[in-house]
Length: 278
Image (cartoon, rainbow, N blue to C red; front, top):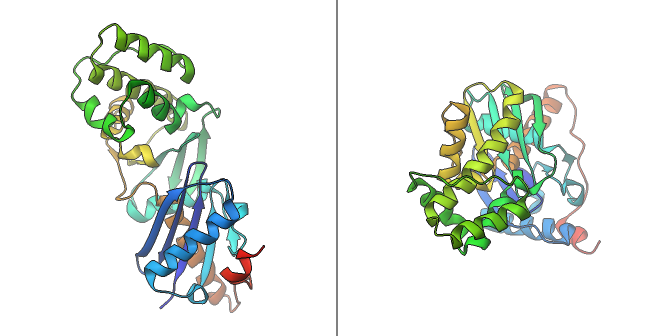
């Protein structure tokens, strides 16, 4: 059997997958400050879960903001390329990808799993998952409950502030005025959907549209984005894993292409134990 691994160290979450014909092992956890040790730890967990030795992995690709902190990776690839590849594995017909991470959001136009154009927000928290975390805390609710609450609303509140800090103050003020919680939450999601949809429309959105990242699990936000864009928005089975899946699949492509050319793919000659003491 051939095994390929993808390690995606994002700004807030770290993901690892091990694949052969499909995903045989995956790990999702928070990104910590010591990313080199974290990469080693999550890779060990994924290997243990798959009951595999490190040496049995044919190729490892790292992606995400922390990809340079995965010293045992054979190659580093941008998250734009990896998300495009991963999304196409789940949705071969996909043309537009919306990825909303913990610290930013991005739109990617893809063709047969290859990125052909992309846009990103301006690093403002108001266009990211962080915006939902802050407003959920301000409202005293769990972020995972926001989607269902929003779907119960028939009159979403208007959140006028685009700055996260001022938006936080605004929702607290409206809550004190007696605005129903479900309407406030719906308004928060509408606000985020407005910003993200405006950004993505710069790409000339085409069907099929796919959303990735942790906020893709928020049904209220997915509906709001679908309404803003005028297209159905699909969600992968585990939207946090698309980057890591794409990384693993790109590793597989690299090995196969090298073999076709009668070459051996370049690999790092290191073990996890050697990495651990760096």
